Image (cartoon, rainbow, N blue to C red; front, side, top):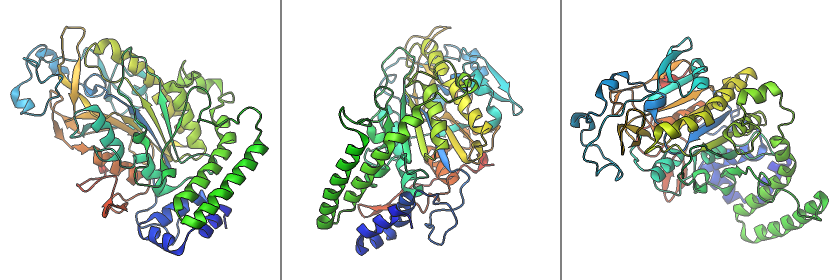
Length: 481
């Protein structure tokens, strides 16, 4: 029996163990502590689990909302509508932000970017994304995403945690809790924040977006830094070597164990396990972030920024390396996708940041035979309006927030590549076919990783809490292989 499991059983009281098992925590916690794949056939498999298509997931999140009209959802007929008002029959009284609600009119701003079909599937993609256009046969493009949230903070909180109100566990925390870890030397959930090129302020990212909420704290995401130690206090202080750190840690663990014997609080055991994880990460994280062994051909595939710590390209390559090492869920945030004005100046910079590296990640995983069991997701929190915010000219415009339709893509992990799912009207304002709520997206991510979102819940405040909430959520069957 694993020494980790032995320690866990020794330090759990009977009441605590069976109490957690009743809520589904027993199986999840044991899977996490054993460092094994909880999807393996077992009579103790939790009732929310089934055979997965994907073992791990990588989520590329474009914070600020990319303009689907200029990247993914071509509307060539809008060229004839330049500077004409959005018809009231299309808006149909839908909510506006305070940034455009005071405008006297809502002039149509057709995209200036050319769209062409690509791949065997013929999916049309904007000229802003030449590299991603090369992988359309591997991705499923969903053009009919929607959400109720119209402002950034509630919208990003919603898609990350399943609720617009802060305090719930993030998607990555739910996956860590439900699936456990495949690597005892690295966290199950890692977060990477990227630099961006658009020369403007960006929406803040709060740690609660990768927090554990009411789940045990060990399931929160570990954010790797681009400067200094990848993780705070990873290096030993001056004059302290590894043997001294080990001795200090043993003494601290003994004190924590004494405290546990008095209080019987399982979070104390979490604290001990996290200290041990930090000690093991002193060796595993430097090896993870050392790119010197990567072939030059791989580095060139990710693009010229790949050797710059903190760049999106660098983080995509790290995500592939983490996937190889058994990290269950990695999430890369890229900020600056908020083009209320000067879209044609800022959006190409943002697209250049992420285009080559996103495509390289998918190609790299495919080359290594890992795409089949690695789910890759790309997208933001909502979309942009067809009408212009602010001054409109034939060569420049801005777009406001639009939650009623936007585009995302998925690849690998049982997703059917070469697929376009859902349709929007000619103004890219309303969904006309196959709407996909963000609850459906999260249900699909869970499904591909072998989790039934209906059954996957935790008792909190007297309720069965779920990532997908209490309203109907559906797996997007139309994009599954």
